[in-house]
Amino acid sequence: MLNNDVLRSLRYTLNLNDNALLELFQTVEPDLDIATLRSYLASEEDESFVRMDDELMVGFLDSLIVSRRGPSPQPAPPTELPLTNNTVLKKLRVAFTLQEADLLAILDSVAFTVTKPELSALFRKPDHKNYRLCGDQLLRQFLKGLTLRLRPETN
Image 1 (cartoon, rainbow, N blue to C red):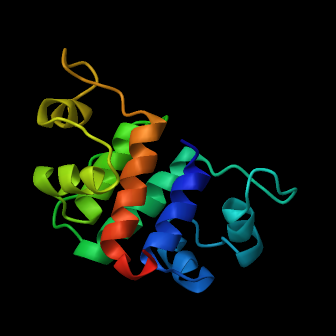
Image 2: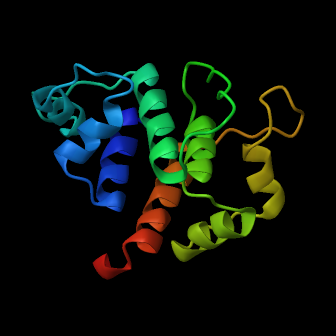
């Protein structure tokens, strides 16, 4: 899934305006301006569209974690690049303090059934024999369900 799609979805889910988004990007990209941010938020068909790179998305997700949960006393381990859907899902799980039951309920709310073993396979290390890649559809449905959970008034 494109980083831009994740950014657009989280912006809507959290009801963030441009200034709030820029604030989250400050620790990663202090020189980011409104025009560049809007080019990340533009649709792919828009001529101003610019693809958001993985480093910037990792920084954004880390800033989201800190803004929602506060700074961690231990330094976060470096995120391996290229960014995968599994990593995005892990970071969102941390940011929103979601347990396994919460994740299953979020996916169930959008009629996307995942079993507990399938879910746990998404959070394993890539070299583990039961590791499973998180597909675009699963991540998209998770973001949709997260929106339903955090913005119930939009239903």
